[in-house]
Amino acid sequence: MSIVVEHEKRRKEILENALNVFMDEGFENATFQKIADRCGITRTTLYTYFKNKKEIFNYSIKQLMIKAEEDIQNIQANASMSSVEKITNVLLDILRLLEQNRLLLSVVLDYLLHLSKNDVDPEIRVRRRTVRMRHILASMVIEGVKAGELKKVSVKTADDFLYSFIESAIFNLVVLKRKTVGELRDTVVFAVKQFARE
Image 1 (cartoon, helix red, strand yellow):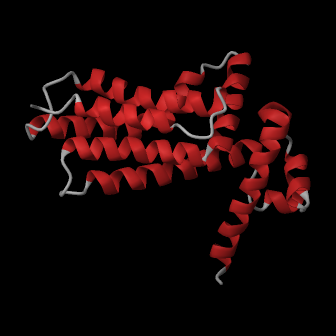
Image 2: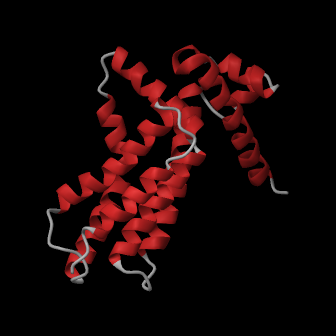
């Protein structure tokens, strides 16, 4: 196995342990030493993989976003699907990914609360991380309207509406501590069908 592959595998193992530390301690109280201890390595070794806890945290979010964007782009490129099917499948795929990453979402919420306490506007961070996903949703709406498959709607309003399902899923999974958002799936399917041209 190449060194690069082994290094990446080790980074993912560290990430899993770090998420548990963030969950147990909260973002603020998690330290680089606690993460190293949980991983069974020294802080010096941990520095060969990450420079600080914030980099570990950002890496975990980046990995989730990369996976989500890859899945979304594959659905978007599928010419055999209608616009309604694409938008529905993208949202359902995102809900599935959120369910699989409930632990990370809890850490993200803790981090955003940490920012708020320190007079940093968390909305800027959230917007920066989600702008590409929102852009893809908006472009699918535009594509559907142009193809005559969707009703003429305000793209911004439609994008906000569709994105609200993602926010609702996060609230259900993190704040209400639900393990699944099954009921929300049915709502997504119903709601997206309302955009279809009759």
